[in-house]
Image (tube, rainbow over all chains, first blue to last red):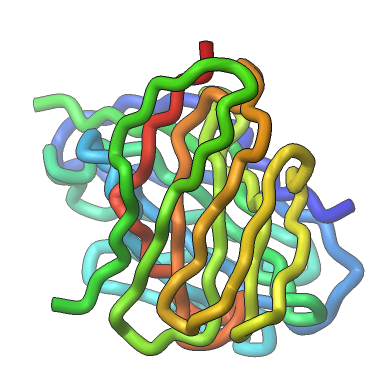
Length: 114
Length: 113
């Protein structure tokens, strides 16, 4: 069975610091997609970043970047210059192209402290 | 405005009383999906649909039904709800399949007593 593991249930960092959220996954597939979604207290789910497994280059979106290590099956999210608005639950997700299923991790609750 | 809408947003019901949660998207997306979110368990996919009249089971389909008669709508049906289906439910849609960004609805908080 496909699994997505987020080993940090909760984290806190000071505003302006850099924080890294970890995500590992288990798969025998070669073609898939990885995502990080943010869920702020409003509950609205928002895409942060998307990575195509066949691309070696790490995806970036402004202050958000990933470290994608395909052989290690690792997909961590780095948030630079963290802001109070980054306080949210973050979910890592695996998109399996074989049958279009999507598997989410259990989430990491991130607190940005003033 | 491009969006996914769900109704109702909040629902309290009793065990065994059939209910339907509606989901509609106005982006002409092919792919639609239902998830449930529970504390400590993250989001789990219930059912998904790649197109009209095409539906597939996710990881937790037991106790749920779906239908996709029109491209824009993907209702979730609980024919005999039980307390273990108390959860936060999200509908989502995407341009095509699991490789694309999912656009989520605002969520439906369901309580079954």
